Image (cartoon, rainbow, N blue to C red; front, side):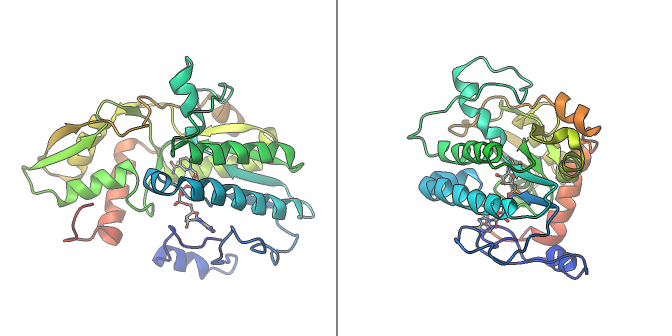
Length: 299
Ligand SMILES: NC(=O)c1ccc[n+]([C@@H]2O[C@H](COP(=O)([O-])OP(=O)(O)OC[C@H]3O[C@@H](n4cnc5c(N)ncnc54)[C@H](O)[C@@H]3O)[C@@H](O)[C@H]2O)c1
């Protein structure tokens, strides 16, 4: 279910919808009656719908907080109405650690047990993380079997351009050979998880009884690389010679973000396996064939 406000009705989705066991429903999950017709026979429900992306959050913080909370309340209400729900999977975010990173000595890699600190409420970016903290709290009190997931920089095909990897790939692809590539937050460090690995972790977690009531990081612990190093990998993937031009850090972007993956690995028996080089290449191949406008202006 998706309202396609950000999701794309592309050939992949159409291909999936053709399968007998798959149903695609276009609907706005913020509406009070959005899920009145879903019945009571679902075994597993994953709630991924949310307004995401720093751009959207800075532009419309009230809407992000309000819509994300409303959607989560509606989906949890439908989950509570199921006859024999095996698991409700809620997609929270690594951003829940943002205030802790700023205010206390947060261990890196960060375990799920780290205390959560509420950042400045007047800052627009806080609205997104708060909507997820609220969603996590709803899960704990909903009296349903749940698992909370905190994804850390999941990337891959079909994610638009509002994420550092597709955005850098797009700009590197369109830059003239021998030219320059502006890179923001060059010294900030991240780990990146290919989408197939993230999906494998989600599926294994909801199938494991050991994960009921647990909060799990989703991501990879290493390699932790700087955005500057990532830009060099992107340039190599695109096959051009470009000079990285360092630009100032994006406001509110944490200097380091790295999940402690030991609990997720122990409970699911799985560790992300797709190497960063491979994942970035696969992402580039998909964007080249499906999404990169060959002569459109760079945003
Ligand atoms: N990708 C990551 O690295 C990452 C990191 C942290 C958290 N998450 C969380 O994981 C989930 C999935 O993230 P994603 O990267 O796939 O983002 P995404 O934007 O691709 O997916 C969210 C989907 O929600 C849909 N949506 C928005 N408003 C809706 C509404 N009113 N009704 C129905 N559908 C609506 C959008 O159209 C979109 O397809 C999100 O909840 C996000 O907060 C992702």
